[in-house]
Length: 246
Image 1 (tube, one colour):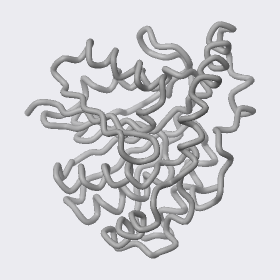
Image 2: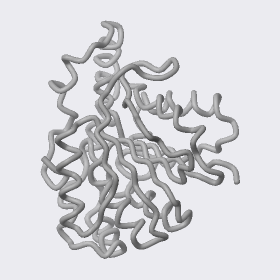
Image 3: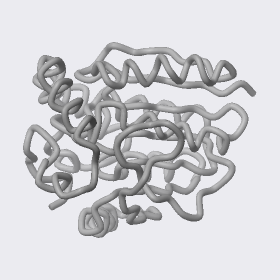
């Protein structure tokens, strides 16, 4: 499986059912699923074809490089945010949580703007390897790492990537995982990487329109006043943008 293939509208629940989670958290997943189905339905759209064509042309990628977007994949608007950030910041290091279509876009943008490195983490070992092969077929490379799920840091629910050898000068942090099927607030644990952000760095959180991510954004705003957060409601899923002061 690679991100070139059509995917199920939701992350595969069978991959997470066996993971140890409290009953309360499992019930919260069910409750949020009942609330946020309109957002999930809207996320099936990957964006306008014209916008995707413009993005591919900008990156000098072939027309079929990203044939399927939407569902749990990034949409065109989020991918455009990534390219805009790399062109503007020229980051030496990009860290990505959840590899896939965005990995190709990041790696290609880095090759065009500044030549920085991408370190991407994903919980699925087979998917990480498949994505690395896919990037190689497009003439780009990245440091894609398998990060098993385990206990989350701090007071966040769900499970979190067990990360190793993290850099301390992250210029761009792209958050597109883990899936909400673990818990609606699961991506809040990404704040454990905020102390590693370089001066002037940027944070991009995908799926920011969902109720869970909105609660995460509120908590981040209270805990990290030194980071300016703004919400872009355009696109199919919405994007939370964080900017660290220079």
